[in-house]
Structures are given as C-alpha cells and as structure tokens.
Image (cartoon, rainbow over all chains, first blue to last red; front, side, top):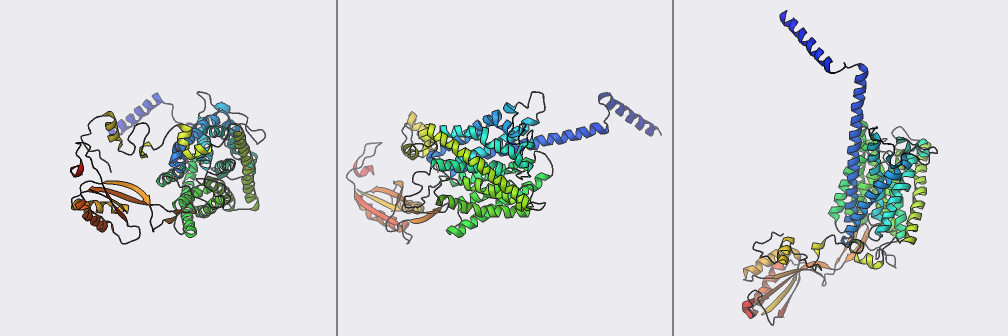
Length: 468
Length: 112
C-alpha cells in the first residue's frame, strides 16, 4: 500500500514538473509537430539530392576532359567552372522567375526574379527549391560544353552560358514544371510526363549542343575531303570513366530527388535509375562488340549515360522491368546515333547530342509507352508533342544565339589556336607541364619534380628521389 | 670504343638490363621511341571509327663499351630481347671517337 501511494505521488510530481515547463501536448499540436518533422525531412532530402546533382558537374568535367586532348584540358575545366558559376547567377537573377514565377499565360513566369520570393525570416522552402532547381539548370547548360569542345572561343561560351540559364532553359521549363512552385505551364496541363527532365534538362542541353556543333563546324582534321572519319583520341579514358561513375552517383540525386519530398516513392525511382543505367551500359557494350569486333569503352560509357538520360523522364511512373527495357533500348540507340552524327559530319567529341538529345527524346517517349497506369494514344501523343516543342524552341533559339555570337565576337578560335591547343591560346596555361621534355621557364620537365626543384636551387641532391 | 644502339620491345627492358649487368655493363641510357620496320602497325578503333597506327612504341637502349666487349653486348641483347615474334627490334653498332666523364674530366676508355 505504501509503495502504491509513493508511486502515485511520484507520477503526479513528475507530470506536474512537466506541466511547469511545456503546455500539455494536444492531438492538434502533435499533428503539427509530426508535419514539421516531415517538412524537415523534405528539406534534408531535397538539399542532399541537390548536392548530389551539383557533384555531376565534376562528372561532366571528367568525362569531357577524358574524351578530349590534353592540350585543351584547362579550357574544359574553365568552361565547366563557368557554365555552373555564371549559370547560377543568371538563374538566380532571371531564370528562376521565368521558370517558376506566376504565369498568367502558361508560357513564362513573371515573378520571383532575384529570388524575391524569399525575405529573411520568411519561409525558406523557396531557397531549398531554388537550390535544387539551379543545379538542374546547370546540368542542361554544361551538356553543351562537351559537344563544342576543343574549338570554341571561351568568351563566346561565357555569353552562351548566361543566355541558356537565363532564357532558353527556364522558358521551356516553365511549360513543363512551372506548377512545382508559383507558375503553371501549358504543356504540363496537357498531362506531359517528365518527372526529372529527360526533355526539360537533357534534350534542352542536347539540342543546344547540336546547334553549337553545327555553327562551329568540326574540329580540324576530323573529317577528310574524301569522306573518311579520323578519330581524335581522348587523352585519359580512366578520367572519362570516373566521370561516368560520378554522373551515375549524381543521378541518384537527380531522379529520386525530384520528389522534393522524403517519402517511400524514392525507392522505386532509385532502382529504376540504376537498372536503366546498367542495361544501357550492357547493351551499348554488346552493340559496339557486334559492330566493331571488340567491346569499346567509349561506347559503353556513353551507354550508361544514355540509360540514365532515358529513365529520367519515366523514373517515377514505370516498373523496374520497364526501366531495364528503356535503358537497354537507349544503349543501342546511342551507339547508332554517335555513328550517325559522325556520318553526317557533325563533330561531337563526347557524344553529348546522342546521349542527351536523342536519348532524352527516347526516354520521354518511353514514359508514354511504359506508363505504369497504362498507355493510350493521347498519353503518347502528349509525350511526342513535348519532345517536338522542345526541339522547336531550343534548336532555333540556340542556333540564333550561336550565330549572333559568331558574327559579333566570333564563336570559333583561329586554326592556329586550335592546333596549338586552347590551354595556351585562351588561358596561357599548361594542364600537364611535367609531361614535357623541354620546359621553357627553366624547369626540368619530365624529371621528378622534387629533383628538379633541388637542382634548380643548387642544393646537393644527397638521397635518391623515389620514382617509379 | 663502340656504341651499341638497340631498339627492343618495351616489356623486354628489364630482361635486357639484367643480361647486360651480368656481362659487366653497368651504364646505359634508355629512350621511349616509336617506330616500325616490316612489322608495320595495326588497326585500332575509337568510338566506331577505325584508324591505322603505324608507329609502335619501342624502347631504345644506348650502351657505350670497350670495343672488345661489343660482340658480347650484341649477343646478350639479342638473346634477352628475342621473342621470336615479329617486331623484336634491331641492334646497330657505331664507332665512338671520344668519351668524357663530366664529373672528373676523364677521357677515353676510363670514362666509360
């Protein structure tokens, strides 16, 4: 009996103590608290995904550098640094507003410029959403860098970076994704499916890349007068492969992150993303094996990316088995597309047009065919409409942009600059100075760097430098 | 003094170096070179486009020895660099008119 009284007293005192600090939880306040936890989870997932997608910039840089020559490596790095950096500012100032601002017409937004939707102390969701969207815009912008590699004037590329992030990308984006924030687009109102952007991001980049490659013309020596295609070898295949692995990883933010919410949907999107990439890689490898007699690394790498690009649109609305089919078909398509563009003498050093333009279109189309809720002519028709309008908006505007740049400041470097290498011509630099036999600044070139420094300074080199 | 210049397959370098060390040759200079003889080159493929690679990577070994040692050096290199397959390489022998050790200024055979 005494113990019973004491335990009752104990409970009453502790409850009273709790009451003294907090209001008692009610059903309503519990509901709000649970919703707040979910909101916090949404923020965390969206921003982690944004960081993963940001890291795809490194992937693009490595792929482009690996597939091109050493004498242009610095230029590739600069273009990738700048299309992200300048693109970020342009998207903050203008692009985000055009894409997600209030849209009376359904064709472009008119509010939210300079991130005006955010005021200090206000709801920061717009910041998380903007962060997620800016890395998507930057992905579209950097696709073009690969197709225009090794012969583009840096200043011309900077101007392009601003215009694609400020105008070309966001306006089409507003048609398909505007309602994700304050806007609304005519295309999405028709039921257009593009969950993470096979068309909005990748085809936009791919068709702009096509325009750029056409206006530029092929690299010197790529195509001969008698119609032969002369390969210009990439200088670092491991770097290219590293880039593809980084892109694959980043895509786990690209696709599942497009839920911008922490929920169970991300599981199937993750699986679809991975299966499509794997299927694309395998089928591209087999296609190259059959066509060329040996499984080729460049095509296999492109195949993985093709699968990833293709699944980006349907990733939330198809079964994993369908994802394999979608990726596999993309793997075959990309090999054929690379060969096709070479045949019609459009020089694309990394296959960007084939991977992002062509397979972005296939992926968007497949979202209609493999739609998990069933397909119909209307569904497929809307997909085709989206694919077509993307091309009709992006290709002419990008072509015009590049043509204007070309006739004003010039889009292509001179033949001498192209042959010498853009690293020196455009940036006064050398990406791999230690790999030269003679070094004009007085260094020791291919001698071990430690040895070189000692020798130049005049110290006695008493112990051997470890060198493989 | 004679200079023996040998062009060999790159993966044979360690074997040739050991064979030369065994007969008393302690110094040599090597160079990474490219070349072809009757081997010609081979076809490679890059992103679906075929191209001919004429110049094959080789290693050039330069050794300067007493004239009396020259024949042994040629034989040692011949045996150790041989695979029996096309592209094994060639050896050339040149007369050397002078040699100098930079550190001490010695000339002639004591410089080798």
